[in-house]
Length: 144
Image 1 (cartoon, rainbow, N blue to C red):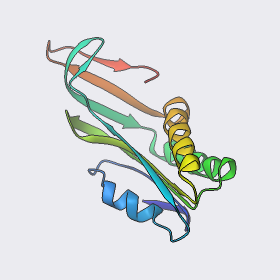
Image 2 (image 1 turned 90 degrees about the horizontal axis):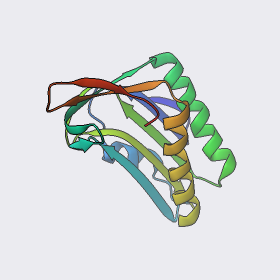
Image 3 (image 1 turned 180 degrees about the vertical axis):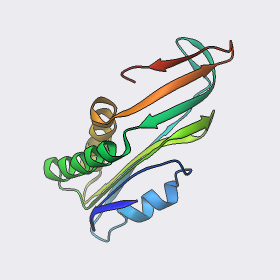
């Protein structure tokens, strides 16, 4: 886990992600609202039944881009704290793949920043997803 500052924490790691750790990272007495997005591996996609995912990342660049994104969120909204965690490696259906958490004095800012954060992460951070299907096929999923 890398601290961009006391208020911004990011991580790209192969270990399971902790929602409790994300909540602790964004806890702040000045926050009136905290929003947490938790992305999980689902059991289906447009390609068929999914048995698992593999995430690969360009770790150094992904961490840098997450730092930049956390800073961007803090500039666009009056946030107290931001945490962005992404998992790599093989994940089973139901496991957590990504967490974006934002705390702010008011809930609207926390919601907006959290939504923006996950959308930008999917666009700009070099982390790739490979779906394994029940059919035995596997394929890389672009732009998801």
